[in-house]
Length: 222
Image (cartoon, rainbow, N blue to C red; front, side, top):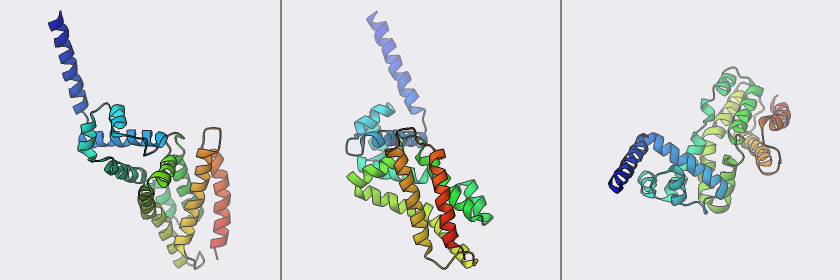
């Protein structure tokens, strides 16, 4: 009986090991990043350990190290993963608004995109990770800001610059307008994630954002 049970246990271990190996390297890396985001958004960077992440992924700590070497490398990869996970420049609706030179549509599309991806889950919102990085790991926050500037800010800044050339917008600093608009959006999102008692959603944020877009465009147009 012991031999049978021992043999059965051995077979189970082998089967489980094969199940773990079924994930491709890309999928395994993605799994680790997603679980890291979930844990860090709840506990912060300082309270999160590689052992916690490994347990959540149902893999060994050594495997986490194999992919990311150190916790610092994993955190840096996480920041890039968050910024690149939903690139504004690839949003079909935003691209269409830019093509049609729909000023309201461009600003509205960017706002809708950010709200969709940052208000999807309060406990796991990237906003919480931004907070933790500001408090615990300023260098990570700096990296996040640089990534955000590279994608979201650049997209809007370039659009505003083109509309100035078209003679539609006033000759004003495009970067200041883009940075101010994104900062306003983040403030609305932060308010929903941290203050509101009801689950956050776009229907509460977007009406206020739409009003601000109208005011902003009135000030920009000649």
